[in-house]
Image 1 (tube, one colour):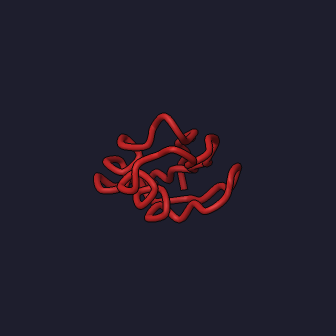
Image 2: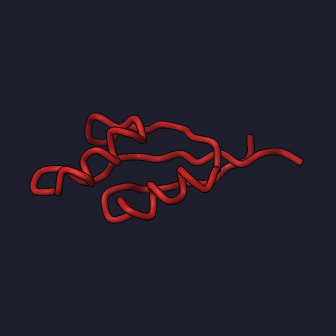
Length: 63
């Protein structure tokens, strides 16, 4: 069975966001607008994405 990966893109600015939200986005590896990173689909990553779902776009794909 192939593992899933998540493609995460930062779509909204961090201006005006709380420091914990900014730290979560940095923890995901996102620094600039429209930057895309890939992560394995784990519970920890899913929890981080749930916290910043209003700022990012998420695409699921198989490895």
